[in-house]
Image (cartoon, rainbow, N blue to C red; front, side, top):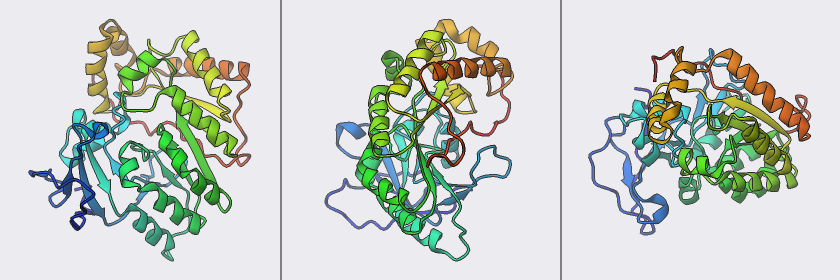
Length: 347
């Protein structure tokens, strides 16, 4: 069981919090404290509070990402992005990769103390730690659970380099801590903004702050001295890959003061593939044949499509004055495409 390192937190009966919900619990979380909250932001959501035994996750050696360690204080994500590649991981908890991923969120309530303990261990060598690589650490639940401030404080206190990739504007709450950490170690901050079309945003990313709000946050972080990278991801075939959409998105990213833009065409891993296909058939049925053709060989669109799309984004980036900084020029870690998953059948 991949989640055998989790255990339930003690139920301290905090009167300021909702009472535990009624079991049954998922088989993978037999002792979790389950809570629901009677507020509009958390309507229909359930939170499984656990005390993890460890928090620093080793990236498999076969992965293509340029870091070896990650921190994931949450599992599941209220951003509800229909394409999220992390959906499959929810099935390891006996949840489904669709609605459960959006509404059943695991909270590692002791994340901050674990980070402090593990980076203080003599065997830890201060490797770069990446956050936001699985689900967003600044999703709505963070406003209630506040796991990130003690995590950042621990990394600051031990001068441990780290990066954060997010769609969550709540990161601005922690700007003072990020600036303190950047004085003693390398800190990378990146936002994900795949498109600026508001109709598409409301349908495909219904739980996220709007693209314009995210870009406002990019501006504030840039004004605070951070070289903020923007991952233009994902670019959706037939929906946000036109010249007009690319130009509008890159122009907005440049105007926000981003230091760089990195395009990432849509890829569809198991779990995400099925959920996205269901959404596409409902919202844009005319595009289903095109997607069957593009993704007939697996999770990734053909290399020719990816190269052509990347080239058009780079042309737009040059036109709007964006560039890719040299390594080490800025306190920034760019998050590349995730490792290639297994091949799948047609949508």
